[in-house]
Image (cartoon, rainbow, N blue to C red; front, side, top):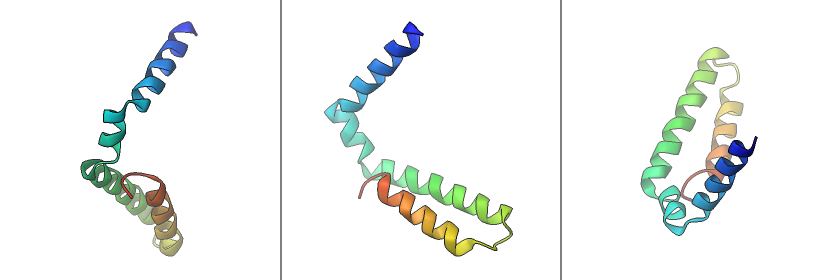
Amino acid sequence: MAGFDDIAKKAQRLLQDGKVQDALKSEKAEGVSDKVLDGVADAVKKATGGKHDDKIDGARDQADKHIGNQ
């Protein structure tokens, strides 16, 4: 598992980089995260036959508060 530990450490260093943080908080990243969240919400709504749309929308909105540019 030494290889995995090395990858994890490199990923942590990368995420601490200021340029990476700026990119993750950019408008482009926000647009991507919104698109992904919308797609997931729509898929779940379709799978549940529209019975839980309000709860799904609420969960999507809560997730959006924690992801992307706020």
